[in-house]
Structure formats: structure tokens, C-alpha cells
Amino acid sequence: MRETIVAGNWKMNLNSLSIMDFIKDFPHLVEDITEVKNIIFPSSVYLYLFKEQNTILYGGQNVHFEEKGAFTAEISPGMLRDMGCKYVIIGHSERRHIFGENNDLLNKKLISVLNNNLNPIYCIGETLEERKSNKAFEVLKKQLVEGLKDIENIEKLIIAYEPVWAIGTGETATPEIAQEAHKFIRTTLNEMQSNRGENITVLYGGSVKPQNAKSLIKMQDIDGFLVGGASLVPETFAQITRIIRED
Ligand code: PGA
Image (cartoon, rainbow, N blue to C red):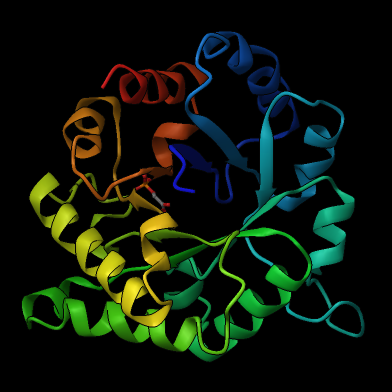
């Protein structure tokens, strides 16, 4: 079932004090909104702060595919579940481009988290260079085909289309560019998964803010957002959630 989701990827930002404030303030700002699901992805060292509350859904920004062992600094799917996470981001473009994570590794992570009953948000997206040389769809297809290889239990899968050139740059994809990519993603998922792509939630990410949320959410294949910078302030994040609801 496709859901309307507005997720906040906090990356390496905020601290225990500001997070406690967010946890206190944010639920009141969206308490009348039941048709949009908010999910927060804090730094893993602060997951315990979310475990102590039960209003805000949350998850990990990254995960290792093994269940345990000698993997210094890594976090297993079971550890995320132990901290009360229901979600996890897989393959964010910063993981792909700064930390060298490739489709094969991300495929292992996706298989592992789905087997562990977590909901992955699998991020895909092309660079500016790839878009300029007309390779955007080729790249997206490869990320889907290789990342989702041998995966059939896709009920919990969420996809985020995040064009790398729009992340943290202030430059958003126009609603038309985003819709074109989302439609391509859904068609590809339908081909790969015997028409089950219709049921997969596909989020847009990349400089989403209250000013552009409305025109993006109007697009047929955009089911919600993965928000970075604009998710750090409760009021702004709530504003984006509210705009979606009013559509
Ligand atoms: P941004 O980040 O909204 O700050 O562009 C989005 C993301 O990286 O998920």
C-alpha cells in the first residue's frame, strides 16, 4: 500500500539537547495530521532518546548487513530493532559517493534488513554529470536492478529518488523532472516485480522546503519526501507535513 510519508534525515546534525526539544515540540505541531507519516532519522548515538518516547517514528541512517561480529563501528539490523527502529535508510547518496557504497553492498543490506522485518528507504539518484549526459534513467535502472537483485519480499520497501545535484544545494528538481523520474522508477519496479510497483511508496528528496513541497506533492507518482536540512527545525518540518495534507 502506498503511504504518504515525510521523513527527516538529520545526517550528522543536532545534539542531545536540541533533539530533546524536537521530541517535546514536534508532536504538538502535527497532532491533528493523521494521514501523513513522519519518520525521523537521527544520528545513531541519539536513537536512545527516541526509544524513551512513543509518538515519533524513527530509524537508522545506515546499517551493516551482518547480524554481529568483528565489524568495528558498525550497527546491525538487530541492534536497530533493539533500539525500537522500524525504518532504516539504505544507500543515501552521501554513503554512495563519500563512503564508496555500491549497489552490490546495498543489495546485501537490503536483503538483511528485509529479513529482519525493518522498512528500508532505498535511495537512488543520478549525479549532475550523469543527467547532463542523458544517463539518468540508465543509472536509476541499474541502481534498482542491482540493488533489488533476488529480493521478492518488497512489501516493506520504500524508494527515495534523490538526484545528487539537488541534495543540500538549494537546487530542487522541478516537479516535472521529479515526476518523470518517479514514473520511470515505478514503471521499472512494475517490470521487475510483476506490477507490484504500483504499491511501493516513492519519495522525493533534494532541497525540499515549505516553498516547493506543494508543487512537488501534486505530482502523481510522488508519494512524499525525504527531507534533509529543512527537517532540523520542528516548525519547518511540520510546515512541510501540513502542506502535503492540505493538497
Ligand atoms: P536536503 O537533503 O533536503 O538537505 O537537500 C536531502 C537528503 O539528503 O536526504
